[in-house]
Image (cartoon, rainbow, N blue to C red; front, top):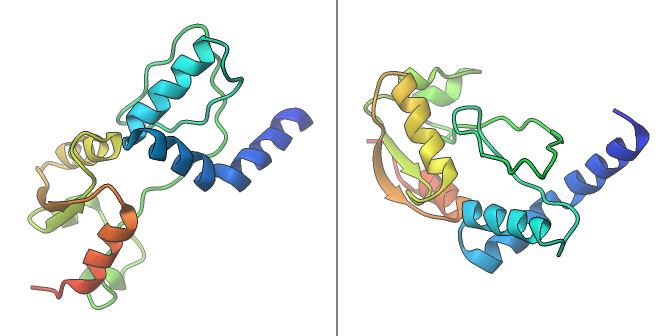
Length: 147
């Protein structure tokens, strides 16, 4: 990676949460926010867009644009500290079959990624609650006792 790309990558990573939050505040939907940013790029209203995609859910890219990977971000499982799955270093997705899921709204790419990943692991997740804000989801995980 050349120095210019490395410098930009560091800039974006340092401001990633603020950039994502601003885009979401404008639209209320993560996928729509990224689509609107691509539209602004196409119109010449902005010079750069930061987006995300999942291997199981690649995002189409207009041929007018170039894509540069800035970072690879893992997907994590959140469980209460007293949950049996918390004891292991890793969890197989198939281990979650039959357990209740908390997930983002169904219209989001994250929710679609969860559906596809679980289908690949051989099950349909049982979603018992949805929220757009991940802090709310984490609070629910912490608050609900193990059945």
